[in-house]
Image (cartoon, rainbow, N blue to C red; front, side):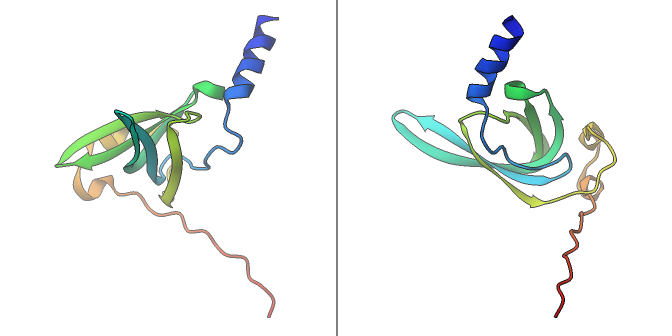
Length: 123
């Protein structure tokens, strides 16, 4: 009974169309920031190194390098504070979590790009 109530409560707060991205993708996360009475959008761009959780508790971790220092930030996927998530490029990865990127620096951090083949139309 309590599980059904929890599912119903979670269903109400889920996004209708959550953003589509995978681990290894380079993304721009547009976050709504409240400063006093004003609201502005702040962009955090980096590589998605992890996704975990399910339902309303689903989170994703984005990592980027700022002033030769690694910065990671976790975002809730279904948060109303996330304005949008733009995928800049898709990376080819063979792991679910990319924590090994934490020890790497420079060119070793780069991931191969996933190429999307277009369907050939008949002319």
